Image (cartoon, one colour):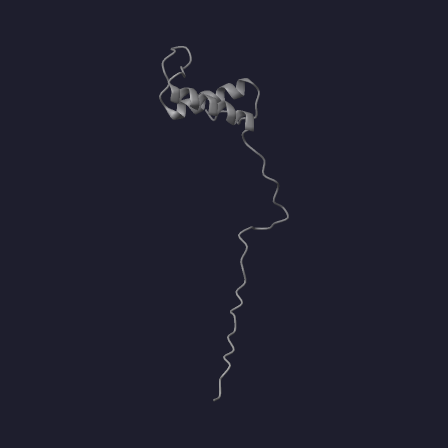
Length: 87
């Protein structure tokens, strides 16, 4: 009985890395400080509980976007790192 030894070659595929390496790329920095995100978190919590009121009118805030805007506004007033308003 003659047995044939099959020589299986493993296909050598080069693994392409998903990271692009370039020497001119700078380190990314945060746009919003962690403490600013805490402000937004607390405002969202108040909105969900029905306790968040808007500025002068004092009406109840029901919009998620409005709650985020109020949180960012308070963070700006406290001097935290938050980008300025676009308009």
